Length: 301
Image 1 (cartoon, rainbow, N blue to C red):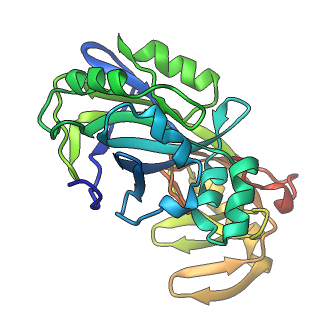
Image 2 (spheres, rainbow, N blue to C red):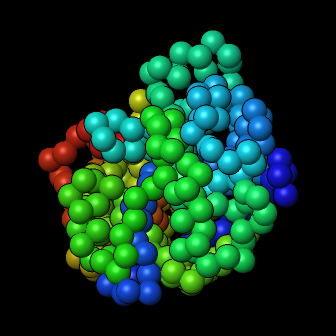
């Protein structure tokens, strides 16, 4: 188990925040899932897929003394904090770079923090221990430092934590049943993520007719007009009619069932999910923005 790839336990999707004394509630951190393995003076980091990423994070050497157990496997979220909140793109940058010079510089410009929320192994395997026992062991063996810190959690009060996370522009919360065991690779109903809906202005890059949906895009610092998903829900027949009229002179090429257009029309959407590659999911159309410039539809994260 130690120093070998382990698939982390996954969360299911919850519909709305709730209060329940049988659950604890944690912030949903916006970063990459990382498992840390430590034995003596050796520490290694593995991604969700099992990829070894230790060399990307030299600051992990500073985390060794924060882990008081000789041996441990910790389930974490790797984040980069800006202004007190995690910025997904900053940690994504840390994961992408591989040149040693850039990595050394990024330790200072994009310092990583590993937020620990579970303990899989210390003096023995803890997978079948109830969550609250694992939490107590975790608190006992991990000190909080700028590089490594146990996540905060509250018992029972999911609605209040959800509202606090919304005020702080976090993604949402994760609800975990107190008695839950840890099942590597499983997606459990005992762990639920609850996100709040976000709105964003996007440019329309194309459309599909059956069913009718808009292909939406955003501008990034290094990539312009990047497709980031589709939106179908919320589009009324009058919205469809107006769009097809506006899009008719803008059509370029057709690929499969997608008719691409020049990026001249913008709209506002709601979305709930966002993948590591910035693909937006659970989208809903809110309305056209006929006075907005497409170049102003940018990703801010």
